[in-house]
Image 1 (tube, one colour):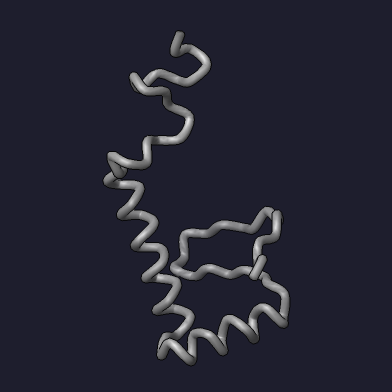
Image 2 (tube, one colour):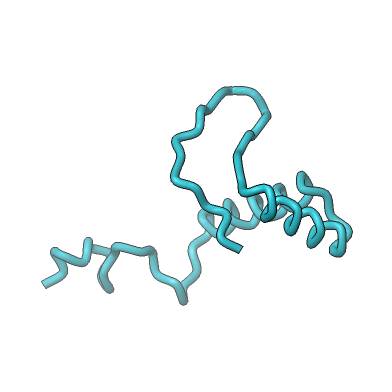
Length: 78
């Protein structure tokens, strides 16, 4: 399910997030969420919290992208 569009979206200080996806992908998403017993908001918040938690505590097994073994940028490691 490729739902990504490279469109600059407006950002505001409100608590709302607005995005556009293909209508057929929207139907598929809502169908899958219904089968899982989730609302779009519940699913989104779960995914967002998981992403933020991963970023706050990097894994030892997945080094930060763009860093070499010694924590230096890869192009300066030698």
